[in-house]
Image 1 (tube, each protein chain N blue to C red):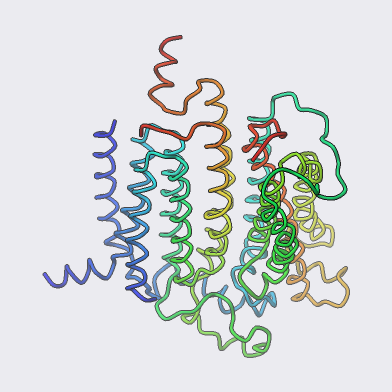
Image 2: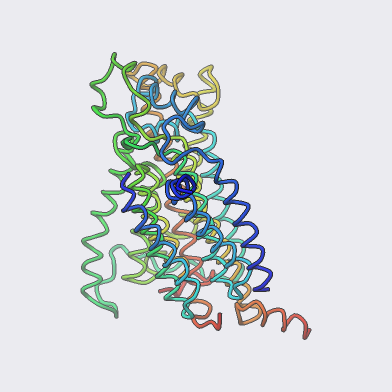
Length: 81
Length: 251
Length: 133
């Protein structure tokens, strides 16, 4: 456990979470959410939860982003929110 | 709505902060969650199951029931999506092609890179499944990587071509086979006079094993079952989502 | 005073988990776009998983894979539990992640169906169209 590393990633996580919810382009939101998942995966690898980190890298950063993009492709990309 | 949400979030946050003050200190090796059962898993897992990766041992052996129904949840989610999106009339099956198409519009570099990448990635996924006993990995991760290779192929070629080789029907069959392998190993244990998913009974039919190695080997079988279900169901979910259930035009 | 300060600093992980969780909760309630709502739901979910995994952390411990794999054999009694992270939260959360993506898929399928029906995925517009009928 290196607390500087922890703090750095946690601050980045909060920033990416806020940006993913704030940005008005849904495709950008999906991509930023992918970055969020990847940071989360780094944090878990650092905590010693290697299996969880592996799963999150494959599922969170990979597949769930693909699912979100597929939905955005079939619905709409712009939002006023 | 925004004001209401903000007030609710602040109130809940304060309540959580007050609760968090009672949590054990960060990284405390003697906090309640790190006592009792987990100590047993850490010290005895290798002794009882011959699997050095404790996560795999707990996932597939000690908590095998849990994992079986988590797999069933993935299966049900795939069925639910097919039920929600797949009501439209589908064309009868797309042309079956022996090889991937040589000439298609799109980027040739991406297509050729995919041709080289897919076999290597699938091999890696199998390594992840089979080597989950000794390194991070296992059925879920390997299955997700296998599904990702199919998604990669649909991105590089088109959905129709890939569904011609791995159709919706086939995804359902393979998902069933995966769950069947998992539950079948459990039932086999019952037939051999033990309890459901108590693998040590399988040493009677697995040649060259004792009770400990039987647990290790049946964990591999269980992981393969999980991987098959996760692979086919996640690919089916993608295929439905990307084509709005029509399964013909996609990315 | 310095006691309070060390208390706050020593648990900064927990405070940030709570912040992340609250960001997710706020998005689920206040965001009007459905895809945004589901991104908020995933943030909420990962924050909970993060908290869960963090209960298994031991300072100075390594990953929960036994060193020297099979050589240990008879010396199994010598394993010190303090040297390995707690594997139990990892197992529970590993399956939760995979199930989470499957349920996200179901949610997105419903969003597509809603878009079919109302040609929008903004909540106020759907409510407006429902009121017109």
